[in-house]
Amino acid sequence: MQPPHLLFISDLHLTPERPVPANLFHRFIKEHAPETQALYILGDFFEAWVGDDDLSLPFNVSMTKALKSLSERGVAVFFMPGNRDFLVGPAFAQAAGLTILADPTCIDVLGVPTLLTHGDCFCTDDTAYQDFRRLVRTPAWQQDFLAQPLVQRHALAKSLRERSEHAKSDKKPEIMDVNSDAIAATLAVYTKPIQRIIHGHTHRPARHAYQLNGLTGERWVLPDWYTSGGYLVCDAGGCRLADFS
Image: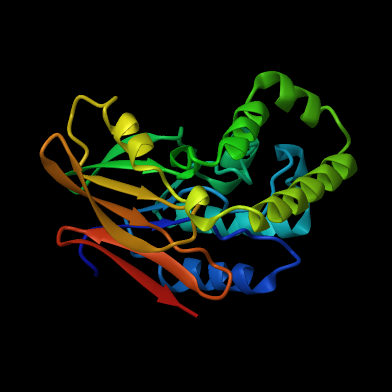
């Protein structure tokens, strides 16, 4: 039996049109996740999620069943919505046997105060994206979107993704990365010093050190799953990135 450890993943961008990440995820559930205490999914698990009434889609059924099988083996599963799947709700959580987390959330990782976030809240240099992020998280926008038929929601989600990819091509890479001031502002909210940050979104897996009020912390960026399966494992000895294909 492995020593106590936690696993963190994000940015799988699962969709029927991209079978490689889906196949990798099923392998991950069977081969890498069963021995962990908890699995934390930090956003963009799906390429798009247009509402919990889309649960009957065969692809979505297969993903929820995979997560449910893990929770039924005694692994605690947590899900933090990202910018692609922020409409995940209680019906999905129940079907998948998981707990939804607010973004951000602070937890204790084997004695280390750790901030979990999808990561897009840190990308404040991209003002156009932040304006859009605030808009789609308003109750009015979500109510209007969810009132539309599923087929129209899927079409709109596809259109938004295409527009997003086009917009990215005109932006400098550094604009879409995290802003250190935004990180500091988030950490300042917590009375207890945060020693570790774990997030995804930028698709730039790495470990970074940061300084705040004279204390040194570490920031881990999770990998995407476009070509291989990547995750962060944290145990009593610290954290490390791992991957498989």
